[in-house]
Image (cartoon, rainbow, N blue to C red; front, side):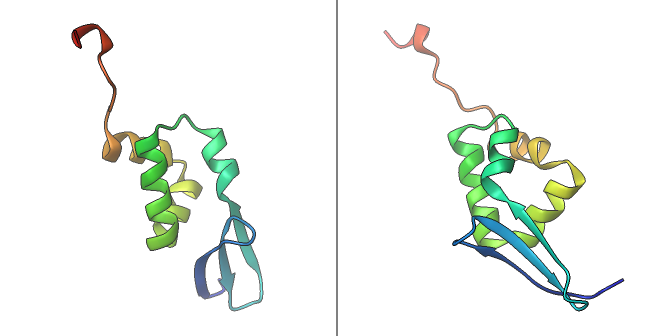
Length: 86
């Protein structure tokens, strides 16, 4: 298995890119990921933080299929109860 050389967000393409020692690359289109799951402002903020600060964890969550569960767990249910605001 090739060694992972780098994992970073490419702002020009909007992708998190993984580069390997055998010159192969995996590119994850972040906007496509965001559009494929139900998000809130809080979960999008968490995704942005992961993309810029811990892109490898972001990639692991996406590839494992656990990103949406992770976002629900860390961002919680933030909503405004309009009926009780008199």
